[in-house]
Image 1 (spheres, helix red, strand yellow):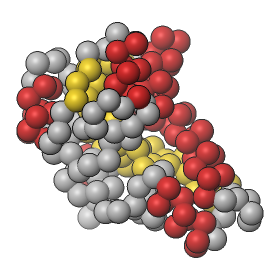
Image 2 (tube, rainbow, N blue to C red):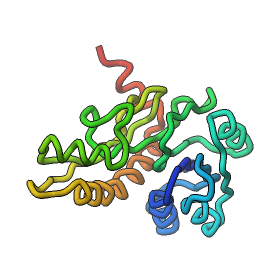
Image 3 (cartoon, rainbow, N blue to C red):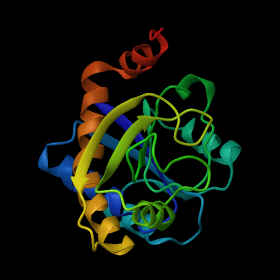
Image 4 (cartoon, rainbow, N blue to C red):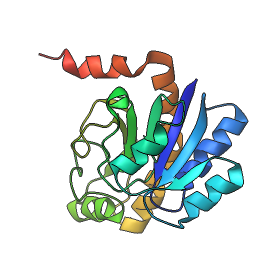
Length: 195
């Protein structure tokens, strides 16, 4: 079972998804702590309602200071909008979701609606999401799982965002279950052993 810290910056929609799936028994994890770098966001209110320890903390040092008080083995970036540097013992155990199919539409500055506007501007006919283990570079690190969705020619960026979020709600829990089944080192080895 994965013992998770959830880092967020906003409304906590992904936290809702985790909570519902844990209760349903389809996500093999437990949430130990929720931290937001933005004060008084809805995500922290939801964490409080669900009964999860929750904190506002700005910066890696403050966040990592809180994490040391909890028994965790996976940090999930659930709409966390800063580059996060974990403590050394968890450096390979940070899971992120990106609202596009990496390596397209990713990197510094590509988040939220910026991604979906770029997807629409390019006229691509498929998009999706990528769950990956994070490194110290935006949207780098081994890919755990990708899911693809077809786009219509007249989809707006808002339409794309809605479709992608729907598939994210399936992909992120599946990826956590895969990490639980195979371990994080399995995914790091997949990319480290490529010649």
